[in-house]
Image (cartoon, rainbow, N blue to C red):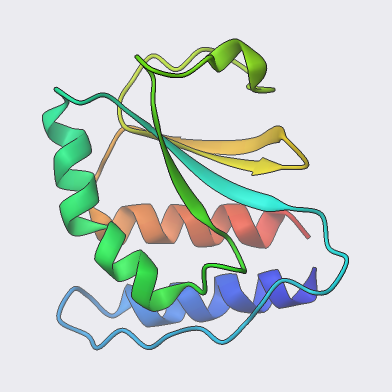
Amino acid sequence: MRSRVAAAAALLFLLSAGPNTGRAALNVAAPAGAPPVELLVFERADCTYCRVFRRDVLPQYRQAVREDAVPLRFVDIDRSDLGSLALKRRIDTLPTAVLMKNGSEVDRIVGYWGPDNFFKLLAHILARME
């Protein structure tokens, strides 16, 4: 789990300098045998903020976070069985990013408040998982 904390700290450092800062890839992978962790982003096809999230966050996420450390998956709420997921509560706001560990919700980021805020919140959540 220490590698996730290091990843969160490095992610926060890289992204807190602002949008014009060069994004370096984090070379921190999940430790062997670590429980699976995944970031689910719930969206809907007609959601404007969901499209903005994809445009603003996804490229930076791919540059800053190794996919094998915390993979990101988009979930269309109109085409998915949300009842099969161990969510703590309903998805009422889109987009909503939910960090899942072993198939259960750890924490969530509700709505979209810009890429800098998203990455700061995500780094905070990952650091608390230790």
